[in-house]
Image (cartoon, rainbow, N blue to C red; front, side, top):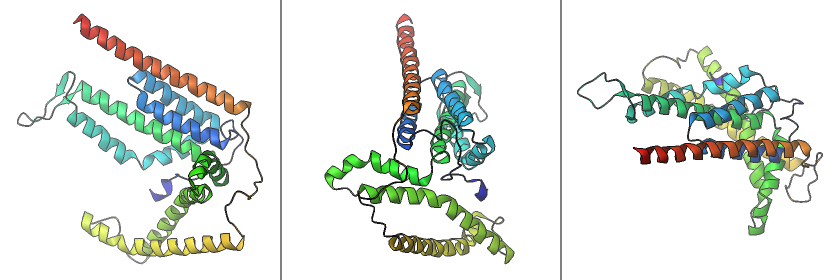
Length: 281
């Protein structure tokens, strides 16, 4: 399961998504996330979910990689769906297993659970696509450019962008480190998968201690290597590839804006229809 975590990994390619300006991809990702929370019905949510699948197909990222990344949120998605079914009692009653309790399964609860699950999956798909198609270096430069207005209030944008990118970049490294340590502990006879929850938590202590030690060692080595290369992160630093918005980026902006406008229109139409329906009743 540890190896299935793909957050922070970069898969090189020459697709339309890969060639987009990193700044454009970050902005489009945030616009997509906002649009997800504007959805009020399955039609608008289905549009965004279909657009996420189409974006993955255009990026030529293997769907096996995408499914690996989704494995880690299965528990969260199922738990969220169950909560929606339990606490939403709107709609038609379908099943009431315990007469003495106020728990019942209704159509409103099922619809709400499915809606939330699709929203969470769409959110993970599109946000993961940003790191899958953007190298850490380009991501750092893009974050630094987008946060450049903060320099007016004396914020060290270069260091902030570098810290964010390093944290994202080291997620796969730490996951690999955890897998190596767990394999070494199992080879020494450690039981990490059986027993009660308390016993399994205690068994993980020999895993986290060397992980923390190795993390500090890697951080020190990285800082020493950056210092040896005279890294300062100031504005005088040059870049091998200068970012520049092109026709491809403006086309992507236009497509996403039209999609967001359609989502808002369909959601507003539903709200208007609901008010008309209430007045008729």
